[in-house]
Image (cartoon, rainbow, N blue to C red; front, side, top):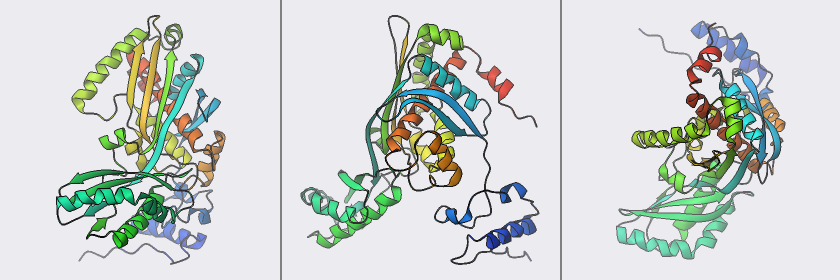
Length: 392
């Protein structure tokens, strides 16, 4: 007879005390035979973990590198910045640093935030398509009351507008909020629930609602998020000087331009959500370092690259990131090491989220340029073979 597995030790209401954490550490060693001295050795104040994790047993140590400096010409981030990046991929930090040097030498990365919203997407159910369609005028006529109900749950979130999509006898909506320095997913969920309860109570007809009809596409990419931004829609652009690029990378801007054309066709064939090179690398590394919700890489990695080869051989390069979801307040941003990483860039706390958005956007563009030039110069494999393989 198979022995039933034992329950993980925990104490209700006291699950973050050192004694119960030590008990769980001993428990996993007894049950699996694995010794965990590195996991158990953590400098994190266990009381600071409340609300961030359950059943803690220690900390996961992640190598942290420093890339930069990068020159950002933004509306919120101005000047040179050093960027902490958490990764186990060799060559990554070096590559991003090289891209940052190229950008900085060419005058820096110019960043522009177009808009920033977070969504929850209730769907309203009716008896027929006609009743669903007739709900729309009432929804718009009562927007201010719906907005007041939603905003009664938060001192930060503001309901900006509601998108509407009719399908069958359902009326799909996307409630779009501004969320201050927080990413705001939970904030928007709570606010939308209050709004839906108000609608349910005050609508003169018969309806019911599902809080999320899935078109908010939380933690996954969608084309809808490319058009109607989830998180920040930010454009980062630079003009790469031909002589500088040739000197620093041994790649010619004309060849880099042709390579972008090839990648555009290949991306179309593959049906990719990003016609660039590897934005997820830079996003994931900065997200882990700064305490972002790492699952939001799924949305944030989406990108639209546009390049122009100028008459003098210089290369204009832009990257539009339609769904960059970051925070400088709440979630994991207040944990000790993550806060230190944000403080390196002057991005911890309230009033700093736009600055972080612009720095991450510049970082991602630096990685695109560095890897693209390595591929064109036929140094990609060589650099990975030399620096990116842990042979221990």
